[in-house]
Length: 324
Image 1 (cartoon, helix red, strand yellow):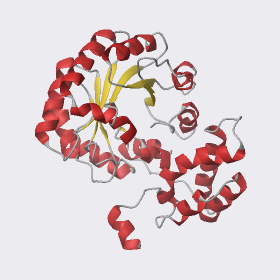
Image 2 (cartoon, helix red, strand yellow):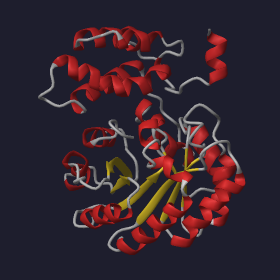
Image 3 (cartoon, helix red, strand yellow):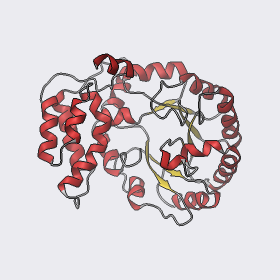
Image 4 (tube, one colour):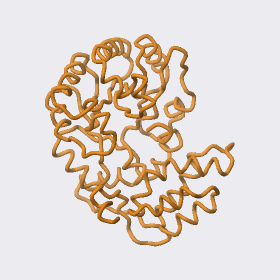
């Protein structure tokens, strides 16, 4: 996730178990782009003991191929083309999810990248379409993906327009599993071990990609492993969550930042964590008003200075409405 899953965060996750494979932030590929050194560090300074895949986002065949060739000179575990980012600034530039409006261009890009990426696996992340969920639209995308034989396909089970607001169409992911020859990962709203096992059973996916759920709950990877093995799922206490937030502050902010800049940086993560801590958004509202480390952690301590176990699952839209 851009501006969140950076080098420091990937290494922090390892303290709590971490992912089997990490996908770093994406490189924005343009005519004059160069490899971002900080993103590249996720692979070149990787001390997690786990493989790291690097992502690209862009729409120009020539420069995507150039970047893919440059990335293969480094110790990367794979190269991923991001066709799923729904952010308006990306979509409006016909990149990420915006490319899903231009199937011929996707076809050309995938063909060129499949030919250029020979040293490491070539993977693709996609959404199921642009507007309303329509199986015919998704099948047209899958036909293109299948033709170019990626080594892995990750499917976020929403359209671009649905952003993160709707339920996930897991049946579309199951359809991708049925028709694709490569392994398929399921992505979207996997925020608890119970949901993880259900999604794997419903879709038949080879595995799961976790995003917001893992930011909110870095213990989630180990919780899923425990549930899958029939072991007890251990939930962190409030004080353990507070320690995680303090570790975030120290890990994902640059030493050259001012204190206020450091507070602002860690708020990006807390935006994903907030409703898992307190479902009425009072925690979110309080932390967003802070400007110093002391004030920020005073708010955090008010909700987390306890030894009760915490599920760290955000409430559904219906649950939020019921609390109002």
